[in-house]
Length: 241
Image 1 (cartoon, rainbow, N blue to C red):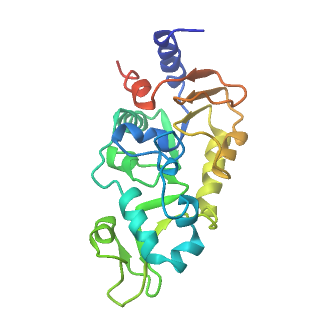
Image 2: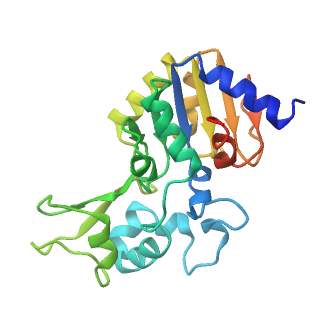
C-alpha cells in the first residue's frame, strides 16, 4: 500500500485534472468540534429518554415539540463552530475552478462559512427556519436563544429547515446532486459511512475516472482509485502544501 505522502501526491495529481465533485458527511465537521452521529462517541451512542432517531422524527416534532427542541438546541446547533482545514481547502478548490460543487449531508453551514458557494444541502440547514403558519423566516441564533419552543411573531410554531426522519429529501436538491455526480470526472467521498440512504445512493450514479474515499473508518465502496483512512481535515490540509 502506498504511504501517506505518495497518496497525497496522487491526490494532487487527480485534483489537477478538474471536474471534481465533493460528497461529504458528519466526519467533515468533527475536526471543527461538531459531534458526529454513529461513532463510539457520537450523538447516537449517548443515552437519552428517547432514541435520537425518534426525537429527530417528523412525528415526534409535532407530538413532543418541547422535548424535540431541548435535544435539537443542545446537540444539533453548533453555532460557535468554525470551518476546519477541509472546509477551507474545498472553498479554495472551488475558487480555483477545480471543484464544481459540494454535496453535504451536514446541516451546520460550515462550508458556506468557509467561502464555498455551490453547496447542495441534502438534509437542510440549521440556519434556515420557517414559521409553519405565516412562512416568516428566522435565523439559527433566534431559535437557539428562544426559551423553550421558538414561536413566530404571529404565534405560529417555527420549524427548522432540516430533514427529519419520516420526511423526504428535497427532490430538486437531490436531482441536482445526482446530475453533478453523474457528470463528474472525480468524486471525493469524505467523512460519511455511506449507510444513510437515499443520500448514500448518490455514489451509484458516478461514472467518472477517479473515486477518492476519505474516512477514518475504511469504506467499502467498489472501484475506489484512492483511499485515505485519515481524518478529512488532515488529508485536505496537505492539498496546497
